[in-house]
Length: 175
Length: 221
Image (tube, rainbow over all chains, first blue to last red; front, side):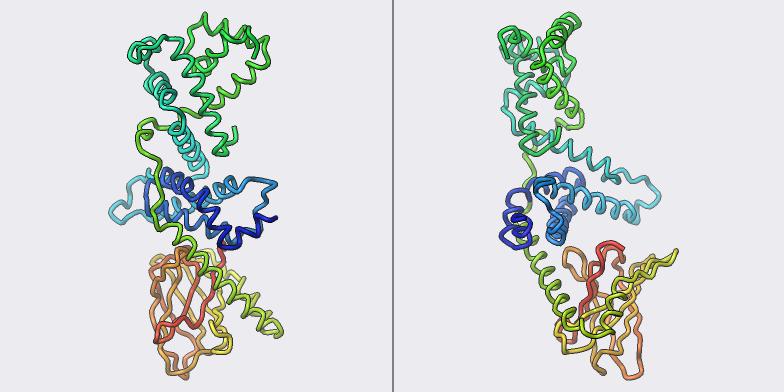
């Protein structure tokens, strides 16, 4: 209840922006692919949060989870709005830019969160995950390149995934 | 984790990524069958592994996107403006609450004049200064080219020129034309290029640019 009332006031709103504004912007930019629209999404998210601050219940969800839920809806609205009004020159061509459904926005959210989590883990762990998973390179080849035994590569994959899991948990991603 | 887990534990990541060969995978799975701790660990790693395909590794080189420096202040000033409007609406609602007419007005505010073709909405614009003028009623209709606005201007002082605008959620104002209130005119019809579903409010300013009346559009209708 206490947080509900503080979000209604500017200091509470400022604290919420300081804690989550940056990541909401990152998520909106990743989903919409347009800096102007991403800004609009963040503004609208906080405006709706302020308007409906009485609906925020910290016992049900964290502030972060609640703000991201609002932001998802805002992004879907913005993407739909853009999709129904394509630029005149593009009339008649398929629109394949931004997401136009909740599922797609949710996928973009997970994608952004995993990328953000990968940025947060140690360089050694990230590098090995990128090489053996995303580039599908053989462990032996990566081990040779890094001058470490294959067992070390396996160990880094293990600790890298653990670190990633922890980073995702810290970001509030439900498993 | 006990000592017998050690040789298997660090293979769990590679197992989650399906990177072990058959013999290695069989050995690790045999251990998992008998070890609840390692099973729990493995299931956590597999959840993470299942999210990996969504990420785009090409984006990892880019730093996390930082929001533009002025964005926070724009957010706060937007909310301050919204707070002022809400306070004003609250005040004018209090002023009007005694009269039966006000109750009718409140119903009109919420009324959505839905037609199958062009959605329309009825809005009451409240004066910024409650005594300055009576509230006036507007009907906004969504048109292919934007928004058609019909204003019942009987409550406005005669002979004056007024500018009408639509407010967007980001607080920008889109002009919606101007008119002069005349003695025998009840209704004026104006238009704006802003689509109705993008309008957050409608306002009327006097010749000096001061907002005289404002009505908030429902978020969803």
